[in-house]
Image 1 (cartoon, rainbow, N blue to C red):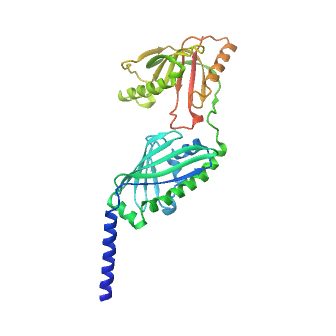
Image 2 (cartoon, helix red, strand yellow):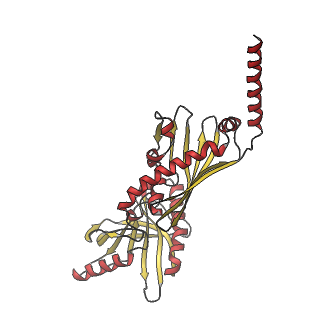
Image 3 (tube, helix red, strand yellow):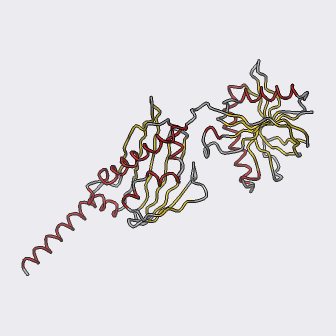
Length: 342
C-alpha cells in the first residue's frame, strides 16, 4: 500500500507540474515550414486556393482515416469555407484573403480549442515555387497549451504536419504541371454574328489614358458590384462589363463606362450613367486568358471578320467579364467582346 501511495503521489506531482508548465506557456505562437515545390507558382496557387484539393495532400487523414469533410457551395478563393469532423476534434476554416499567386490567409476555428490563422506565401523562383505554410495566433487557450506541452511544444506538434503536407503537395503539383500553360497563354472562340435583345447598363464614365484604365477598373468595378448587391440584386442578375465609346490607339485616350449589364431594373447610383442598348445585330467572340492578354489580337480578328463580311460598326463596343478571375484558372478567365453591326 505504501508503494501505491508513492506511485499516486508521483503521478499527482507529474500532473500538477505539467499543468503548471502548460499554464505558463506563451499565449501567442507561430509555426511555419518552407519548401521548394517543383511546379510553377500558378499551378501551386490554383491547387491550394481550392479546399477540395486539400484532401489529396493534407497530412491529417494519415493520422485519422475516418476524418470527414463538409464543403460549402464555394470552395475556392476568398470567401470559401469547409468544415471537418475527426476523432481528435472538429473544426472549420474560411479563406479570408486570397492574393493570386502570392498569398492565402485562412481563419480556422477548432471546436472547444479556440481559433488560429493559417497562412500561405508563394514565391516564384527558377524551376519552381518557394512555398511557406504556417499557423499563428495571439491567444492560445489552456487546452491547446496543455496539448502543446505534452507534445514537446508548438513547433514539434505542428511542424512535422506542415512538412508532410508540403511533401505530398509537391508530388501532386508536379503531375499537374505537365499540362500547365504558362501565364500569358490565351485562346479565342469562334467569331459569330448574332441578334442581341435590348439591354440596360449602368456604370461610371471615365475619359482616361490606357495606362490609367486598369486602375479605374479596379476602383469602379467593385464599387458597381457593391451597389448592386446593397440594392438586393443577386450575382446572376448583373454582369460586370464595360462600354467603350472610343479607344484611340494613337493618342492612348480611352472613353469608357465601367459597370454592369442588368437582368433586373436598377436606377444608377450617384456618379453613374445609364445606357440603353437597343436590340440589334452584333459580332462577338469569347476570349479566354488574363485581362489584357490577347485582347488586341481578339479585336483585330473581329475587325477582319467585319471587313470580310461587309459589316460596319453600329454602336460602341462592349465587353462582358463572364466569370470571377479569383475562382478560375488564369487561362479560363472569360471576356466576351461585342461589336454592334449593320
